[in-house]
Length: 102
Image (cartoon, rainbow, N blue to C red; front, side, top):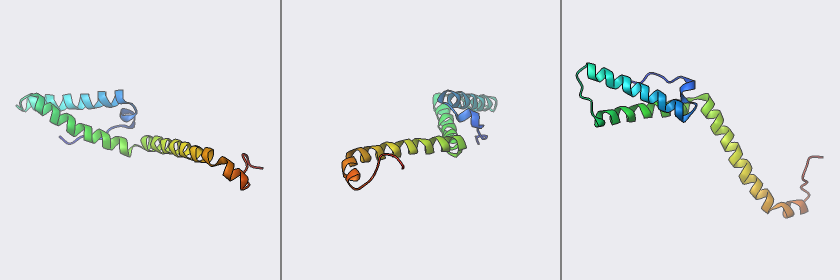
């Protein structure tokens, strides 16, 4: 079953992702029942795996997700830099580095 694109608001939270994937899998399973395909756990698992791949790709390509990832990287880099600055503060101060801009 080829997945239709996810809307940006469907991939903002885990709750929305779960709801969207569940709805799409149930729709696909119902369609399969109408076409005479058996309803079993293995088929549902396969549908979930396929849809999960689609939703992850939608999250990866989401502008909001990219911005959140960028902000998270900024926070991590700032933390790493703060650690380095704290451990090397005395040395850097002796070389003329000041706390604030003049």
